Image (cartoon, rainbow, N blue to C red; front, side):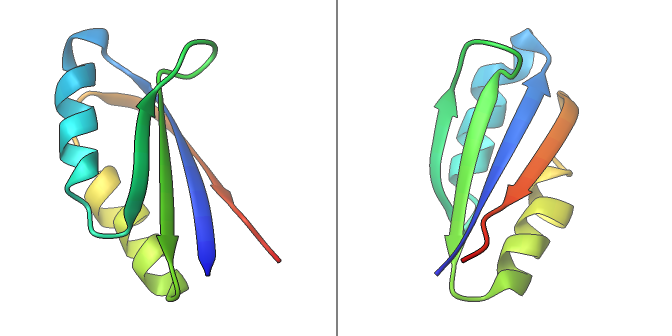
Length: 76
């Protein structure tokens, strides 16, 4: 199983909407609001790495209100 972690800096007024939209993405396993340098943590999981890439490149990047995105891809 492939796993990726996406860390977001978001516009505070859009945070709730961003979390709700991210939860609808098929490969998303968990979405959490976090404190610290980042505002939102998204964990994606799939047997197909291309599905994770598409989720990040198309679906997450397409959400309005994201100021910065950092992706971490887990390797086994």
